[in-house]
Length: 396
Length: 110
Image 1 (tube, rainbow over the protein chains, first blue to last red):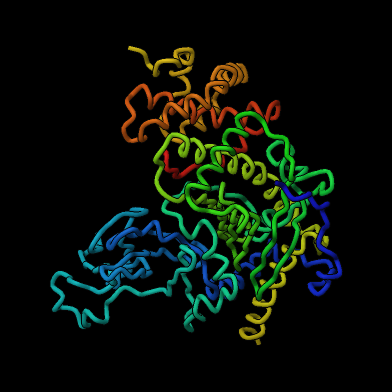
Image 2 (image 1 turned 180 degrees about the vertical axis):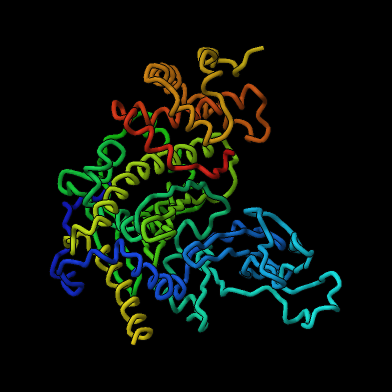
């Protein structure tokens, strides 16, 4: 029995008024000086989502991750004792990057330059002719970066003063992350794109639905409906710098034949995996600064937008799967869901870059957010608060 | 020796173009195809999707022989082609260059 469908009601504007309604300054979306301050105030001092525990299945597993905005290359490893650790990918002798491979399994990391060799716990194990140095091996361990996990996701934090614990940073988001399908993932599909646009402009595209009917007329038909022509969400939530929305979906979308077969088999996989579509299916959790994840069990995906320069970003989209492909149906479902998500994201990239070109001309002093673009406004406020504090503390 | 399992012989003309390994390669085949090639393949393969998956589900993926693997690959290419034929329709030529920038780096099917 289906419950009668309630007509859609958008979130009331007066419940969002506390976030303000003023125009928002345009400069933070393209100004290189602002970007420099974001580097320190936001990215060096926040927990950054960088991977998933399924990438480090056993002791010795490692992944290399480049964090351009902090000019860092990280080795994230599962050490012999099973703990996940994060090190700078840099030999403590004279700074040479140790590892070129993107991922692999090793018990030691050996520098190509002079063969200094480190364990996967970061200790310097051996170095040729070491007695000629004027330092101890204990003082030559790989420099560490704080790392922790929640809901299967790996986070790092570069804060030189020592970060607040991840769970404190996440607050109630921690439990919600643990309830998502991504927490149980053992593998994933991934696609990556780069766009000539500021990271906030890029990220904002994915936290407002106002654009859906114009940019996704074919691929996003199920995200809008007669009583919700813009596909606005059912609810918003805010917690510190993080934010959530409860996604609305058309209760009776038009379904094409292969699309219908793919979704039918997807629901069978969801049931076999023990997921309850109703539990997290509409959850959209945005973690400050640059990560969001959706809980739909047929297509549970995350999207991380990495800043590279004031006008350049990289998006990493991952769709999470539980268990290997054990059947043709499962493999088909995963291929279809990945291709579907990619088709939709492909439509966003060019219009985001067009926005950046317009803003970077300096023509506008302000941009405008409507009440149903409140998540964008909240991101701006969260960033601006940190940048302004940083500026007050570091400029006389 | 047939290229495909019994009952799916009508799909043999599509094997060369569409039975390819790897999600990124299948996406690239969609990109490089003509509207006519997509529509012909969709018309022939989509009515067989349910029976093909049911037939292939009868054995673990790892135990599929060469003909079953080809049929699997055809159906995986159909996933891509169906997005063009069913959803993008005449927007497909405009959509194709946008997709090229979305680099598929990893899937369980690779």
